[in-house]
Image (cartoon, rainbow, N blue to C red; front, side, top):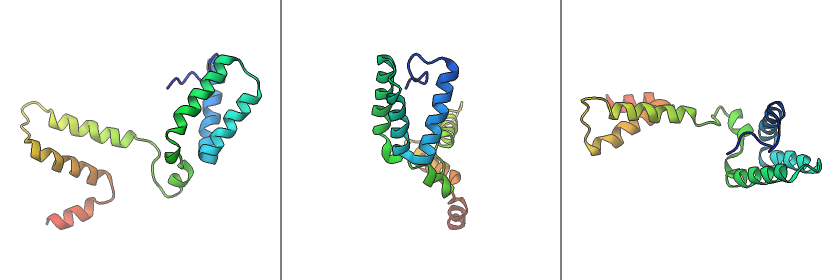
Length: 130
């Protein structure tokens, strides 16, 4: 995804649009983003800007079922994938450590432990193990 959006915008204008887009997603999910794009269309911008807006809508439309950011944040859930990516990297480093010998069948168990550790199930997992 091209984050210099909208096309032809200078750095400050692009950052301002990005912030308006974040606010629109947090306040109104998919419909909020649609309202933002409609407002941009109403400005009668150039063809490259319109193409960038259409590209944005096309991309986000594929993921609109996952855009309930406000609701997720309200119940304490995350809206990013950073923690999952961090755990995946840690697991990969452990599996690839120098001198480590992993059996294929044990990798699934190790990855399950990483998943349990990153969630709220860690105490329940240990109580069953003892």
